[in-house]
Image (cartoon, rainbow, N blue to C red):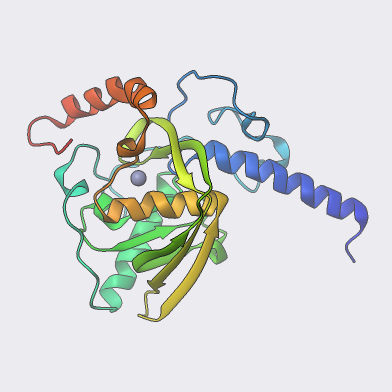
Amino acid sequence: MVTRAALLLLLLAQLLLAGAASSHTLAAGGARPQAAPPARRARPRCAPALDASAELRPAAEEVDPGEVAGLRVLKYPHPLLRAPNAEVTAFDEELHELSRRMFRMMYASKGVGLAAPQVGVNKRLLVFNPEGDERKMSSEYALVNPIIVDRSEGTELDDEGCLSFPGFGAKVTRAKWVKVRAFNLKGKPVNKRYAGWDARIFQHEYDHLDGTLFVDRLDEAERHLVQPDLDRLAVLHGPGGAL
Ligand code: ZN
């Protein structure tokens, strides 16, 4: 039986989780100083997890685990992040295996989403788990050849980070919800509607499949703030980058 007290506890836990989720960002972006965040983002993303949520969702900043499952996350301005991505035509074991390896990399990086071009595979495949927890397999999505068929007119501005942009994040405007048509790994059509945090992750990863990066979507002031970080990454990459 679910008691009223248990329901209240559940609600509290969900609120805490929502706070933790938004503090993660897509890949746990940076923590540069900024104006006081809204209430639900009261906890800085680099702060220790609150007790109640620690067991479920350890607070985490993105990490670069190096090579995982034979994959590496490409960093901006690697040219493959801007290269065209081909439709997937073979729903075979190789595709399953790639998806499994991408999930492993995503969890190892403390991220909540990853697109195939980020690991140097220019195909229209993305994976995400809004929970950012490999124990929550029921929240895993692997979407092939996705398209957005509808989106809200209403938008939200919130923090995002990206595993291909280590060390910082920025505020990005996204549709509040999107309707998506895609295929699962078996080639079966799937229709999804994502809202809020899930919609933000999907839109971020979907952008990767079009060679669009979250820094392309910043307003002028926000772009100005992150430009030194972009310059730093460009220097680290060396010649041949695609800005
Ligand atoms: Zn990204």
